[in-house]
Amino acid sequence: MASQVGQFCISVTDLDRSEDYYTNVLGLKVQQRIEVPEAKELVLGSDDSTASMQLAQKTDQQGSIDHGNGALHKFYIYSDDIQSIYDAALAWGSQCPTPPTRLDEWKVSIAFIIDPDGYHVELVQRDS
Image (cartoon, rainbow, N blue to C red; front, side, top):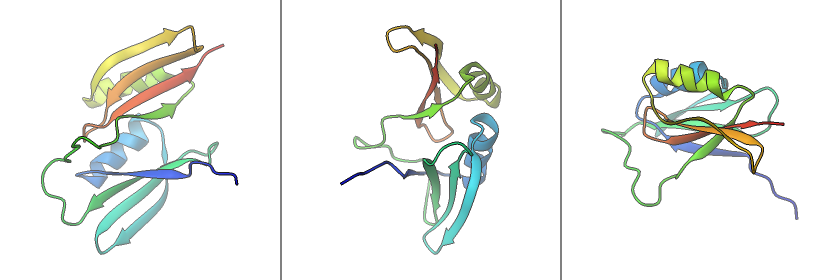
């Protein structure tokens, strides 16, 4: 049996704000818009990947997202230019706790930014 990750979904408090952030800061593209009685949703991805993520604003969402103890710890966005994304996140007003840092043992550079709802995003750039 073969399996692969397809997509994951996170709850957001303001779908329009999150769309702006994920498209203009992170460079993802809206692939689909979904509206069901309990939520408005966006599926985001990129032209060169089959993986995607979904943002969902629940109709009854009140206040900030409660991340609790079982919430998503972090997720990764791969890029060939994490410095530009990091700078765009700073300009957008994001908290950006870790600037681009090269990790020679894995031949990558990483940075951390925090999205408008408090999700930690690890930016990863594969280095040679």
